[in-house]
View 1 (cartoon, rainbow, N blue to C red):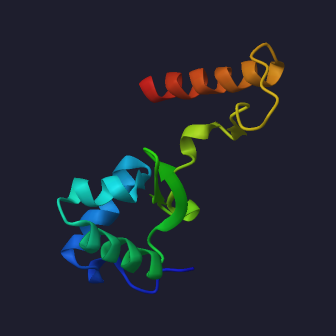
View 2 (spheres, helix red, strand yellow; view 1 turned 60 degrees about the vertical axis):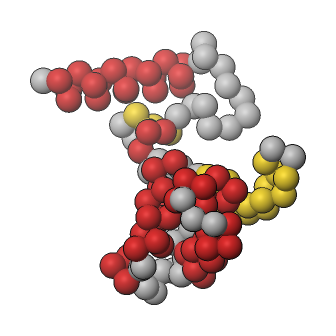
Length: 120
């Protein structure tokens, strides 16, 4: 779902909710409305509006023994740069993680090289 509505057209509450989701990296709806200091009904309306406009995604979740939703930014809005070292994807993505592997060593060296170049 694409966002046909520009962020500038969101209400103040919607912008605050979107900022909260982005800053937290994801939040349970039961915490969302508490963080925004609104009641659960208003919090649900804000989330529903952001979902309909394509700014957030919502999935069923159980949190503290209660059914709720987990709200995240769509994948296209997430920053995956922290998983990269140069053009190498982190070897920690996947099932087989071997910290003694050449792939892991090359990835660490790429991180060090990037850090070194940023300092110079």
